[in-house]
Structures are given as C-alpha cells and as structure tokens.
Length: 177
Image (cartoon, rainbow, N blue to C red; front, side, top):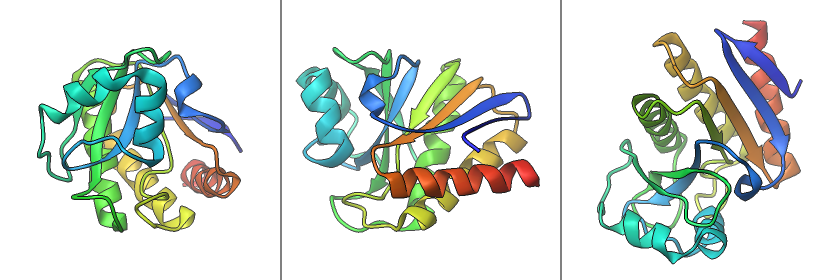
C-alpha cells in the first residue's frame, strides 16, 4: 500500500526526491548545529540555496527533540523544518529519530501547515537501518495522530527503494491496527 487515510489524514509513501515536492514543509533531518553539509541537508542547501542554512544556524545549537522552521529558498516547498536527529554528524538512534519526527510534526501543526514531507530520517549519515528508522517515524506519526494531528497530508519520501519499502511496511501495519 502506498496511500491511506488514517484519522482523516492522508498518508502517502513514495519513491522520489523530497526537493521536487510542492508542500508546505519538507523535513531536514539535521544535526544540532544546523549546518547543512551532506546527506539530505546538503541536497536541500545545494538546490534551495545557502540562505536556508544561514537562517537555520541562527537557531543553533538546537537539541534533538526540538525543531525550527526556515524559508525554503528556491525549493518548490514553502518551508523547511529542521529537526535534529543527532547532536553532530554521525550515528543516531531510533529514539532520537522518533523525537525529531515528533518535533517536526508538532511544529507543522502549530504553524497550521496542511502538508509535510518526511525523508528517511537517520538512514544516511545517522546509520540507522531503514526498518528501525521507519518504525521510529511511524511511531511519532501515530502518537501525533492520537493527539489530534492537524496536518492534512503527510508524505514519506526517499530515493532509496529500501527506505520506501520500510515505509510501506509501516503504513500497512498502521492501517491494519
């Protein structure tokens, strides 16, 4: 399954680039210093422009479990939500990915965003397996849904077929519960 409605929220899983989506916000799995060197962050900065990083680092250091929003520069998305999955570039944990995803969803709600796109949080530089990362992000989504998530459309998107498959498994599980 690649799309479902859960508690009135459209949840979609797709393979592709986060940078191509026209949504209210895309999520950057950041480090606490909010520097955008490699991985998803580096791609966001290369395509969207350095002003995204300049805006973000004004909020550093930002602990795991918090999130900030910036403009999206030249991207199709309107905003970037920076949600640290690690203090500094390197390995992360499922718990940190959960906290980062939860913070990003909570911020999207408080900003009245209707659509948000989330990549494979922690699967690149963070070193988490796609399955562990997908479990963590979907647990955060479920907890937000149970608290009355007001975002209308959540897209889980990644370039990696393995990450997309892990997302689809979690969506199937969520729908069956």
